[in-house]
Length: 434
Image 1 (cartoon, one colour):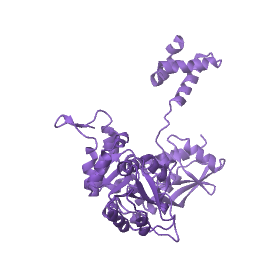
Image 2 (cartoon, rainbow, N blue to C red):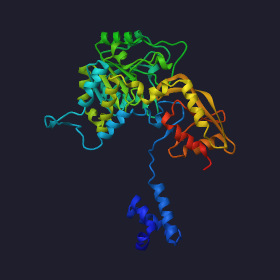
Image 3 (spheres, rainbow, N blue to C red):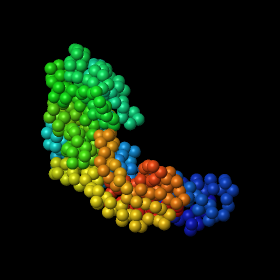
Image 4 (cartoon, rainbow, N blue to C red):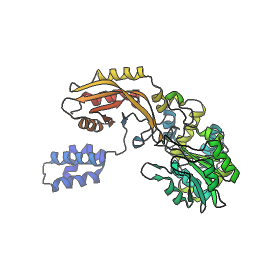
């Protein structure tokens, strides 16, 4: 073993992986019957490279879903990335440097959020589910919460409104029916035991046809008449109108507050375009009750998330949101997408046939599920590979290029591929058989 570790061929794996890890893999290679030093070191190096390869890595999103949950939702704007990198060492997380005294971590975002959303106060937690859980536990534990049957949603694999209510210690009071709920249904369900009215953004589905939902003004009136808070799970973190992107009627956080919601919760990594987080914004008294609850500490964000959220709030307030990756992508013209597509196709390998084809993109990520807008995609077919095999080859590229397969072709939607990533896509397509 000592002789192997002194071999010049061991220098690189020693530097990359360390002495103990290399010894472990060399022993495994020896146990397999190999005796040649060069072969032992090569086999151990390959095994270590696979063993320590990162599982969380950059990816190229060619799916057409801008806020792809499995791919990390919103790509962060450059100033937000820089702020998070700056806070990665020691940071003034809970320290006021000017006075030399202990500070409060929420102060990094509270004033900024109050200013942006014109609300009484705000608190940040680690995701929107945590924000809803915290609000329910702080405001309605042991009491009833009114929820329309049409809003008892399940989002992703584990966020289910009835289960969140149960975990918070509140009691679900179902109101109305799946497709029709009125303000009068809410009024009839009121009782001295009811502590809260909860409304929920439908997120990933739509109910059409013979439907009715109370207007925000009606919900506000019901809550006011019963002297109970109205918590609206807005979810998406929409800050500006999305009409120009072909997604009408998506309510903004400020509109929900203006309609009379006492508290609004939303995600930080969806349309807000920041790091993963959840916000509770609204009444100063209601936010204070949530902030004082023991769960608030259990779900508090770390220094990186707070640095990113503070930077995102500043960028929104300064009106720079159009430079955010998802909004820049959503605003890209069809002509620009087609031009980029033709440029990429000019350099693809000889075994591929490709064209720039019509496509449809969506914000996704639990926002406006049925609202799509025009896009363009590279439609690809390989002479020797099936569409599924070609897609697998692209996913195995470094970094992974993630397409969708549609009507027997591999589709790479150019709206979700950032322009600076075009060269990577071109390299991945030059020789997908390699």
